[in-house]
Amino acid sequence: MRTVKTCLLLLSLLFAATAVLPAQGARYLKPDRIERKTEADDEGLQKWAKWPDLKCPSCKGVGKTTCQTCARFSADAKNCPECKRVEKLLAPCRVCAGEGKIPDPLKLAPCAGCMGASFLVCTVCGGGGQLRVGGAKRWSACPSCRGKGGFPCTGCKGKRVMTSLRLKPPMMDAPPDKLLKAMKDLDKMIALFDKITPVGGTKSRKTVKAMGKAFAAGKKIHPAFKDLAKLSKAYMSKIFAGSQFQGHEENEANTIKMLKSNAEYYLKHQKRMMQLALKRAEANAAKGGK
Ligand SMILES: [Zn+2]
Ligand SMILES: [Zn+2]
Ligand SMILES: [Zn+2]
Ligand SMILES: [Zn+2]
Image (cartoon, rainbow, N blue to C red):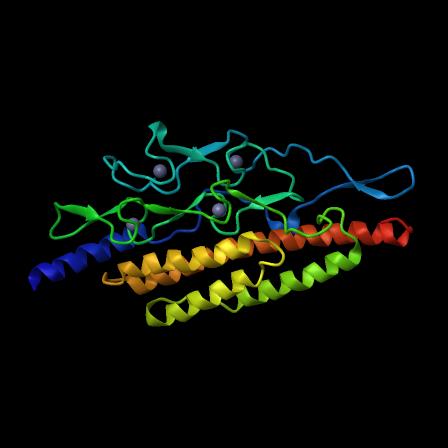
């Protein structure tokens, strides 16, 4: 009995150290402040100006940053799904997908699933892939990720970025009526995510279902949302494999919170770009152009 208690205590200590933190250090563009200039052509119609190669504010153009996953691991840790524990623990920058510059926000945005990490971290072990059980000396493979430390993101298929909502014609050329219709679908999805309250324990199963539905609601405006609906459920079922450990409720709630905020970032980003696209399309429609 005493051993069991010791295990739980140790595991709860581990949880305290590996709880999900917001992407510290990564500085993403604020969606409502993104600007996208237009310029008038010979007929006075607004065309999109060329996107300047905006230097990434997060990595200052380098394309790499100190790994956010394993920064707090012990020095002898061997496993990290983000940087693979390479020298200096440098990982591709999540904000610019390792490019050093921000891609045209009319075309690309950080992935709605992983927000640029290319994987979802295993929050049961914090990404290290192992847990210390049975006293302080022995490590064993994490029951959730089986030692891998994370799960590949199927939203971006490892690309870290997602294309804009798949409208026809594309968002940047779409006429006002198409944009207004797509905006309704987007608002519906935003409202569904807004209603999700991250909780842990038995109640979280229902929340995970609701989140799957929220993702699936967007499959008309982007096929990746279908993949993300599946992924969010599969990922959370892995996280629930850690439910024998103390502190798991809080960890589950934090994991749901992370999924929710990653999705909301992409949705807000798309809403902003759609508003800019609408402004341009309406100005041109008023002049009789398209
Ligand atoms: Zn960057
Ligand atoms: Zn790392
Ligand atoms: Zn794990
Ligand atoms: Zn992704």
